[in-house]
Structures are given as structure tokens and as C-alpha cells.
Amino acid sequence: MTETATKHETWLDLMPPELRPTRDDLITRDELLAELKDRDVDMTAVTLAAQERRGFLPRAVRSRRSGSPVALYPPQAVDWITYARQLQKGGTPLRQVGPVIRVHVLLSTGHGRIDTSPGIGQVMNDLESSLAELITWQQRTRDMVPIARVEVRLLDADDDELARYSFDATNLVRL
Image (cartoon, rainbow, N blue to C red; front, side, top):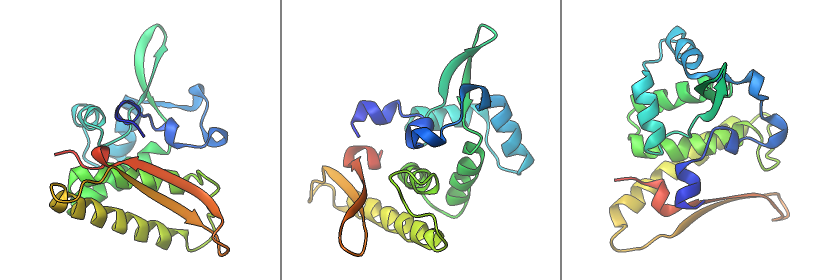
């Protein structure tokens, strides 16, 4: 991903086209925040917008409804933002939440033909932990070992590539 692509990446960009909700099925920022409040997730419109702007969370889809501009989200964003807040409450630094959430969304939507059979939850947890460790390592050593990209490849038993996710290292960690 390029800096520009990541900066303006939306939740829908992370979803496979066949699973993306239609514009009519997207929820507004107010509806999203109401759902989060119902789940006792502490998130304000200002905090959400700031985390989107800084790249910690993907951005809303911009659209117009009844002639007014609106920020729209897939209904699944409620679950994904809930998970992001759980990571933060668990001690994951905000700068690490963004990459972990992106991988979580990619895996949970089956993007890249990922197997969603039982056991994928453990794979997701392991991958998210490894990605967080990699980001921490990159933070500590960034002046000594320049890292340009991080690639996650999913292979089957015959080493055939099922999916590849590539992240620009400058976007993984924001100081």
C-alpha cells in the first residue's frame, strides 16, 4: 500500500467486492456510534474521526444522503471497532491497533480466499500477535535496520500461495 492509498483507505477497501454491502445497507456515523454505545464501547465522533485521519482506523465512505454529506460504514465496522477498543484497553498501543485491525478485517471477511473453517480464530490471534511484535521490533530497531515493506503470505500445504498482503512499513508505525 502506498502512503496515499493507506491514508484514504476505507473499510470497504478491505472487504472483497462480493461481500461489500450496498450503499443503502451502510450505516451512518451516528448509527455506528449508537451501536457502539449500546455495547458500552467508549467512542466519540471526534475520537473516531481523529483515528481515521491519523490512519489508525480505515476511513468512512463519504457520500450524500438527502443532499447532505455523510460518513458511511459497513455494519460489520461495529464489531471491528469494538475489537479495536478491546485491543487498546488490553494495552495495545494505538499505533499498533491500525495494522492489527486491517489484518483482522481482511481475515474475518475471507479476503484473498482465506479458509474460514474452525481454527481460523487461532490463526488470526497468532497473526495479530506476530504483527504487533514485528511492529514493536521495528520501532526499536528502525534506525539500525531499515524496513521498507512487510509481506504476509498465506500458503497451502504444497507451498502454493493462496493470498499475499503487503504493508508499507512506514504506514505500520506512526510515531
